Length: 342
Image (cartoon, rainbow, N blue to C red; front, side, top):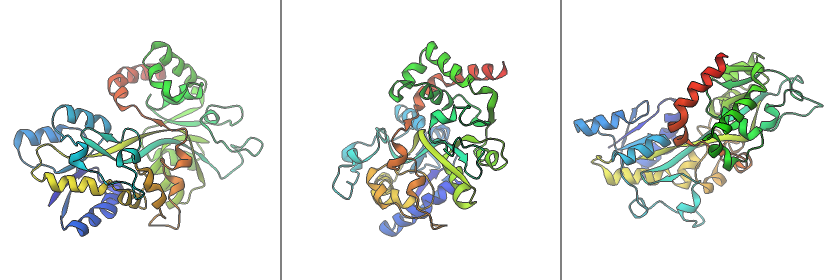
């Protein structure tokens, strides 16, 4: 048996339905699920006690990096892991999205922060034109009305600079300077009086439904649920979405190394990644998976249009710099809170 630790909820259900069952059928190896809350403390405790050891774990980018440096996660060299090629023969390293292959982890899916708006009335429209860009989110003259933003500097500062004309590849280098941070806050200040702040991932859909905002930032998966499952008249704006990855990793002290590596190899194959999108609207991290994406399992809805990594949605996307936020986040959160209180 393999003991696999992941996040629980609908997310873990998508892994179980799309990956775990298929892996067991293909290999005969049974999987036991463990729900955890992220971080590395559990792994450190397993190393100290040599008990309750996981075989595979779903980690965030910072934990993948730090767990590798601490020796908590196994180094996954190319020859050791031997990831399968794409169906057309493209080598795995050319098929995965940038940053998806790390020394101790392999990308499993991509999620994003994007923008949604209510498409039910003409209140938000200017000359029958719907908002379609990040610039429209900051344009109170053409598209008047309150905006929803998550109560954090993360993504908001990146969007402020992008809306102010900064190229995507310059955003984080600029945010490492005082001038860049000041410029981002100045741009946010242009819509500050119209911002409704939210904290819980379910709030953006409720803000739109209650008419409290005309546009809002949102995690892509909860808004998909509102649009497709609850059939709310909302629409997504993917321009300048900020995306990031989750990863599969293998604890260095696992006693089931070969089976764990076989699971990671299976779970990150073109077919498995495409299959998972039928259960949850997170994007596959292999380009070859997109051609295999089908309908949502609970409705007759094509999933491709709702995936962050779909070609049409991904053109202007910005990868979140998790290491930047690890290092600079505490200071920027303090500054953000002071800015809010003024």
